[in-house]
Amino acid sequence: MATRNDKQILAEELVISQLADSPEYLKLIEWLSERFDSLDDILHYIAGINIDNAMGAWLDLIGLIVGRSREIPSTIGLKYFGFSGQTNAVGFGQARFYRAGDPLEATSILPDDEYRRLLLAQISRNYGTVDKIGLVESIQNLTGVQDVVLSASGGGEVTVTINGTVDDNTKELINNLDILPRAADTNINIVYGV
Image 1 (cartoon, rainbow, N blue to C red):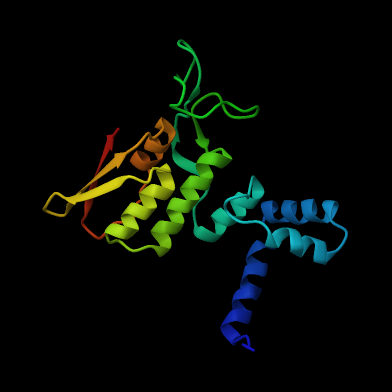
Image 2: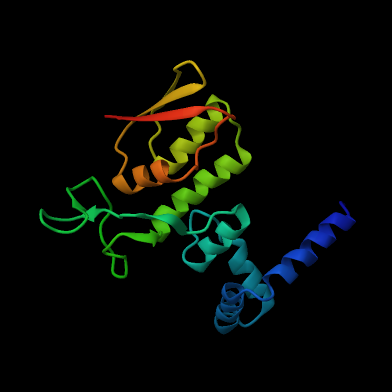
């Protein structure tokens, strides 16, 4: 049986003390205590949460761990399926459907769907490699497109061709955030093919 070392114990103590004054953390604890009768029920519930099924505050908690907030420093206009003449509307198959509560105007707070993809890309950036495989996996996570081709353009430049439909929201994330893993002094050019 593995024993816990001093660093593991210290890390747990630091996490608890760092989150103690966090309003979001306190809301989360309150939410759990209102819905579950015992600590075992809470732990069982939490054990089933992962990045694929997390929503709302749970995604925010994962974001705290990986170091990426759902708030984007620059404004990103979100696109939805809609009809000609509607603000930020595009045709069928080019953007997600509007759900009640989704922002209608340009926003810097990402809804869960976009935030989940951004977190997956951030995890790839944090823990992936800056080689071809790491960059391709990061782009696949962010776009959901599996057909990604890399080619070296020379002079510290890499061209990435994404052969699939990438919605405007994801293009905005790629263009406005430094989210892709890259080696020092490497420029990444993105080409959207179909």
